[in-house]
Image (cartoon, rainbow, N blue to C red; front, top):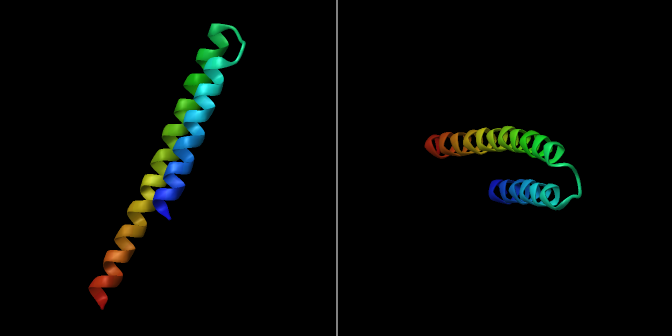
Length: 66
C-alpha cells in the first residue's frame, strides 16, 4: 500500500508541474508556482517516507515478537 500512495503522490506532483509549465502565464508567475509546488512535493515526499519507515519498523517489531 505504501508504494501505491507514494506513486500516486509522485504522479500528482509531476502532473501538476507539467500543467504549470504549459499554462499560459508570465514566466515569473510560473516559476513561483513551480517553486511552491516543488516545495510542497518535497514536504509530502518526506511525510510519506516517514510513514513508510514507521510501518516497516512496526512490521519488523511484530515479526521479532513472534
